[in-house]
Length: 333
Ligand code: TYM
Image 1: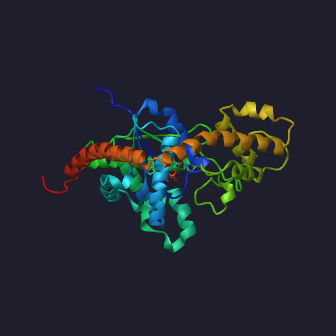
Image 2 (image 1 turned 90 degrees about the vertical axis):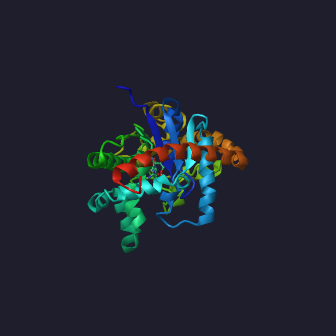
Image 3 (image 1 turned 180 degrees about the horizontal axis):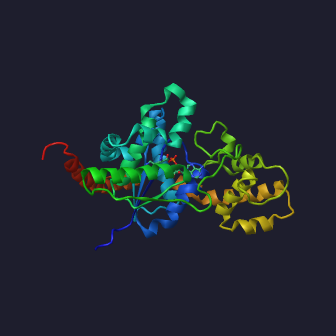
């Protein structure tokens, strides 16, 4: 039997500038593992409109995210970088999978439940059906690996279930993907509320460090980060969630094991620790920010990369959709 090539797919919504949670939980590992797989990285604008967006700003952010993909080190010669809405098969397969998924399965999705709690009666049907579209993104390309933060694992599980359901209903068509999450850092928490994940929609901007924050803003946000009672700088996610979150960020910013950081700051106060952390985060982000400015200043090159990515993704997606249409009995021969 010929071994299936490993294919990696992931994406970010252009709802705001990505934050260090997105970077540590997802983008950073993409850059690290891109050489091991055939990769597709998408800017998932159809997902973004499940909450209202300003059209002009969303287009700007779509390009900003493309520039961020390049700035974090994704190599367009190896990876296909593209915009979801430019490959119409995503929406088409999303619709088909939406006819297979059950309301009760979508109702169990914690991300939907969290958002529905805030929006109540006004929660959009797009938000409810969001996992069908995400499943389509993944299944269209016979994806085997989906590197994401912890909050997306449930959606990848549902994707696996939908692949099995489609295959058993219509015949073997889709590959069941696996999610890939960071061992440490799959869920970076808000600096202001360390029991809540760092989020683009966080009301408290000071709880979230954006990839584009200036050194001074980063220093200010970290100096104001809440801490746990006591003075120990030790990792204990349950008893000391605030310091554990800061240690996790420190670990990713420096590459040092958490134990080593604990030893370095043993007997020192939170102020010293936060200063060290702030400088490490500034150092982690400054080369990315420098490259981001370069890529943003060359829109022609960005457009060329996204055009090529769209064409490559489209070719793969069209082949798969042809099979899907046939299996489901859609259209004429
Ligand atoms: P999005 O744009 O919300 O987030 C992008 C990636 O960042 C991860 N992430 C986090 N990781 C650690 N700590 C956090 N606080 C944190 N917040 C976000 C997310 O898990 C994600 O990996 N539904 C997806 C986008 C998507 C997708 C896909 C991903 C659409 N189709 C297909 C993979 C495959 C999302 O909302 O990402």
